[in-house]
Image: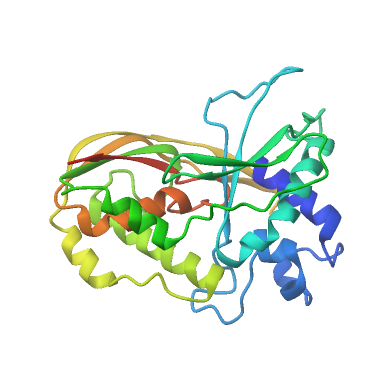
Length: 292
């Protein structure tokens, strides 16, 4: 709902073709911030015109679905690569979301006021206030997460014999044409590397710089030590398609054992970028706990 409300707010204020059905049909999408951020299309993409969106939503994790007057909630939006320049649009979009509301549009959608916006570095848990209610000033974030920041955090880790992934939101992976309902490290890593490759191409026009085949070969030596994941079914209504679509996936915890040092920076990046389908909507978000 947050992703849909944000898209609707941005489209209301900034879309260059209000009559168009999709961004893929718009001849002005190269100059449109809405298309660039939330509905990226690229005719030159080797994986089809629909490519990875350079942003993700981090939804509230409390599981609360009913909010009363005066209640507070928080959510995140992560921007990747060149999309970071679109932060002012996201802030305006968040304000507009509060005015128009989030929730069932056929009933009374919940309206809210944005009280505070922070930039956040998940590799260090540092935050920086960039906007507060009542202020007209928006400060530019001074703490972007770069690959240098990620690799620096990896240097603080000793030999890694294991890692636990806490799947915070439904993680929906597909392997060999079927939904993955039991994780293995090679399957997880393959989808993660694909996600990082697609996202880097969209956000920067480059490549993340790993040896894909070498990492997948090393991944065969990593085993599942404990699996406490479960499948949850979650529907999502698509206004564009006019129907509900499934966005369910695995949640819970899975612990991998083996030499994880070669995978550390990419696992950290995955916790930021999300992995699998519906990442932009908030799916595939996980936290890491290392075991030395």
